[in-house]
Image (cartoon, rainbow, N blue to C red; front, side, top):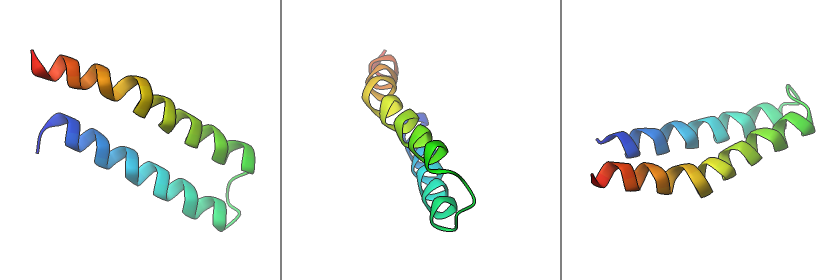
Length: 56
């Protein structure tokens, strides 16, 4: 596995744990959406930069 795949797997695990904690009412809706927003921003801006840097 390369660095990009490991980063993607970790991001998916964070989102799944976030969802489970929200369903069990262990985190607030605000925290749930902040984690989702952070994951989305990482996917939108961070992954393309990682792909670009990985090609060099």
